Length: 215
Image 1 (cartoon, rainbow, N blue to C red):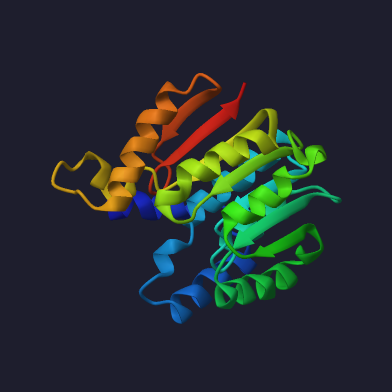
Image 2: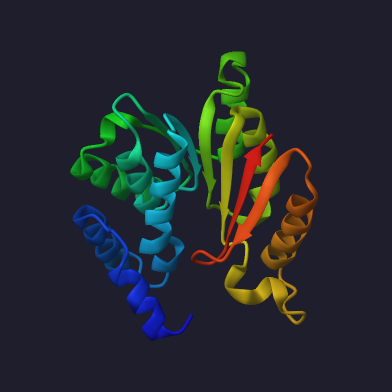
């Protein structure tokens, strides 16, 4: 997608003012890492997906400054709940500020620490199994497969797990790219397309998003 077409896409993307403000704030605070936040079109897609699913219980692995969690929380109905897993306390503090600013802080249960440990703590409670409608993974790429397996136990049948960055700026299709994150994402994509436990689609939204619906 060239610049002109992407600009057209953004002109036809609904971005609440609070998310536009967060995007600008993130670019100022993290000039070399602002790309870690989802793009406006991805945020709108996630919100649409949560709304379409009728999601009430959501887990996010990898919050960063909170763009995707704000988008998702805004889409949740009254009484909806989002478990937000993040290991960076400074980024989480920014997210917390914008949850409050967006009026969704009461919907968010923040979990600071390693996501595998947070998810294990949820799995220790049998009542949590199969109780979530939607999960979004946007964290360390080498950890995706482990998060996926944990979340597959936590989402209900018919629930969706979305995984971001699965096209990895095109590196997954570049034979010359041999870094660890690229290799992990290639292996993940090969695994997901063959996983009969889910209905699966890889879509070119943002940097590529894998969508897996639990059978």
